[in-house]
Length: 399
Image (cartoon, rainbow, N blue to C red; front, side):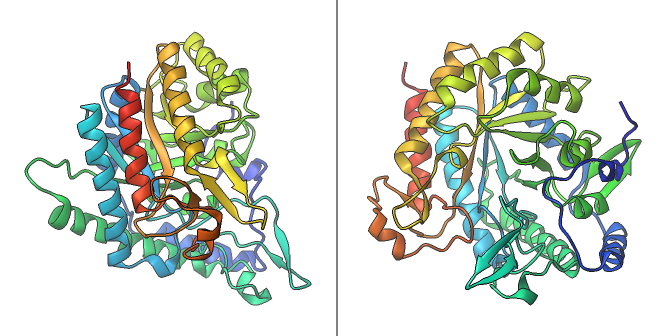
């Protein structure tokens, strides 16, 4: 195995590489970020890893949630407070229903970049770069706005810093009481590696990404020989790996061995995003392969991404019933395999959006026209998210 360094990913294939017009400008921005203060602490990261190790053993449960993509415009206290309130309320439901501590992780303070299936798209006859998140370009459909701009990395850093400052202040002042666990962690996808590298620091002979507590690698970039896997393998942060239907058991075991050779508890979270159509056929063999390897992982379920549908009008949505059904199947499969479902990963918002169909709110396709605000993926609204965790608790407690 080659020696690792924060920049060793440069020698690997990057499936979601960003093409900038000026490499010199990118290098200037990365150099500035490299001398910027860290956003989180090593102690916070190590504490989260301790909690994730307990979740792997079934002693705690992970709730990870937030917007599919953060925007710079949403870097406002009231919006951040709404997301914290949602995760806090959902955490209370789970804590009381599951009778165990809940590890709360927000898709916050860094989820400014998104993978896309194509680098470009056609808008009114003009080929534009696809919107890749505010860290890279703008949603505005124009040639200038869609051109990747390195300066956006600096804006993303400052937005993340403001968001974390708000989280710490709000958690202490509004969410904390004598009974509440005020610990709250942030996460984002390890996608824009120049940004991640710039905020990677060595502390006591260990390397940490100090932009966030928890990073995950998406299903589009989890190739063993890819740049994202190369980057995260050298970090001391806990790492999540998204698992799509194409994942083969033997490949998953190799990934686990590569990313956690010392089998450190709490280091790896395997995030199943198989979808209701594939979970029964795929998940059992994946669990069996990890069990046979003797490796320690935390199994998490993402019931959102594998259940995305298009309406007849081409609108991206998700059915509440599919999301709930996949949760039920995951619980049954883990129970049958004497394994633990250690957590759930949701795309949700505190806003009363109409992006996902169904639930007690009875949202229909016609309702999508009223409050469909997401820039990329549909999210559960406040009522649907609370209903989902309530019904999950009932499923867990069903013999």
